[in-house]
Structures are given as C-alpha cells and as structure tokens.
Image 1 (cartoon, rainbow, N blue to C red):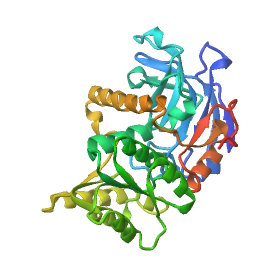
Image 2 (image 1 turned 60 degrees about the horizontal axis):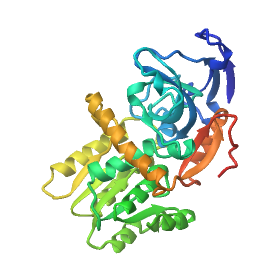
Image 3 (image 1 turned 120 degrees about the vertical axis):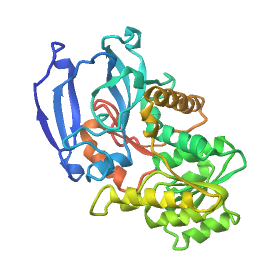
Image 4 (image 1 turned 180 degrees about the vertical axis):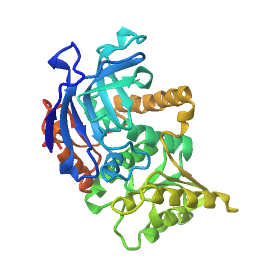
Length: 364
C-alpha cells in the first residue's frame, strides 16, 4: 500500500485532527489501496464528526475494488459501507449533547477513515455495554438480516428457511435472528464452518456438494418458507425451486459473478429480470431483490425504520442473545491485509478494521 500526506484543508484545529483514509484509486488488487493523511473535515450544518472505533469489510468493498459494485462512485474514493464511532464535534444545528456518545452509521462509502463526517440524522446509538468491533459486525449486516427476515420474507415461528453462505457476515446474523424467532435454519457453508453453524443452531450443508440442491430438498421435502440467496447467477433457479407454495426467495447479491469480466450492471439486471418474470407467472411463490437503500426516496421514513430495526438488533446484542461474529480485527492502515483476508473465503463472520493503536490482527 502506498502512503501519502497532504496538508490541504487542514483546519485551525491543528495536527491532532489529521485523518487517515484508505483510498481506492481505481481497479486494483488489495495491495493497490492507498493510505492518505489529510486534514479532518469540519462538520457542516446538521452534521457531526465521528472518530472511528470500528469499520468493516463487506462484499460491497470487494466489488468496488473491481469496479463492479452496481452504483459505486467514480474513482478515487474512500470505501467503507458502515462504521461505529464517537462524536467529537457537532455542526451548526446539532445538539452539542451528542459529543462523547457512540453511534453507528450507514455510509455506503467513506467509512474506512479515522475521522468521518456524517449527517446527525443517520446516527443510531450503540449501547455502551457492547464493544465497538462487536457492534460493527451488526450494522449493515444486522439491518440487512433483520429487514430480509421480518420485512421481506415475514418469517414466523415454525417456518423452515435456507440461508446460503450461512458462515458469512450477513448469513451468520440471519441464522441467529431466525433462531431467535423460532425458525428452523438450513445453512450452506464449507465443511470447516459446520461446527460453527451447529453452535448457532443451524443444520449445515456443504455448499460444494455436487448434489447440493438434492441435499437441501431432502432436508425439507415439502419445500421451505424462504431462501436467502447472495450468490445469484444461474444457481438462483435452484433457490427458487426449493420454495414451498407461498414461499419467498430473497436475493441480495451476485457473489457468483464477483470475478466475471464485462459490465458491472449486467449480472444484476439479468437477476432483476428473472425475479420479475417469476413474480409475473401464475404461481404462489414470490421473488424479491433486497436493496437496503430502496426506501431512501422518503428519507425520513427510511431513517426512522433503520433506527428501529438496528436498535432491535443492538438490543439483542446487548442482552447476549446474538453472538457477534468477528473474523479478525485488523488496524486501519493494514486495510489491504483485511481485504485480502475477507476475500480468501477462509473466515467466518466479518473482518473488522480498527484504529491503528488498537489490538493487532492476531485477535481472531
């Protein structure tokens, strides 16, 4: 990783507010990420400055470095879909009482930095009883899992569901939330993660099994109430066929096309078309693509729902009902190592970036 310094836009607050940022300069491998040190921005009206305590590596950043995330900004930019941090400054119109308090924020980009300016309206308070890295594993993953389960699929106690990639950040959260709701879970993962899935309460199936569809069907001969599929591609057909009458497929990614060449939008558009076709056919099964930003057209309602849903997830975390799945804690300046690890397919849970002065990545 290349490290650079700039003194542009350094405010009168001095060197103590210099920000460390991880920058994606273009389509690069993990080693192509850049570490930049710039002056921390001053929060404007309605904004706050968060000092990052934890941020994460999700599938979105893996796609962004390939230039394949559906609506990513132009290069160069700072990635980072979410973060947990403490408010140190408030802009005009923001209650100064927020200073010193810890919040989570969904950012889509910008989270991989030591200081991040966000809208105060986007803050969700984090219980002081939980560690920042633990809370970070449940920001975008927790919102995604909660809303897919309870708002899209509307699962009920006694239902049976299939979770593909049940060892991942979203997948492991889905498993736990479903079990709390009294739902039986069948989860796919590599064999190395099967014991972990059993501990979380799921029935594991090897995703490399050449008869994966048959194995899943054998565990639920009458079909399942919902399938949560982050893989996309042609395999989504098998996912839809696992549904019982009235069941729901919730698609939320196209991981199978991560390394494919060509248009970044084509796999997603093809998936959309397929889901729309299934919904138009005369059958009782349903197919949805989950997009966390879908409700943003009404910003106030979107933020209120986000606070409600993430607040419930944090409450479960604080109560010990959810076990945070931290795959590794890696210092921010070693983001290349973190991205490489997250892409390796060898970890369970979420790789978390922490401030450079915190624990090394051997805490796994």
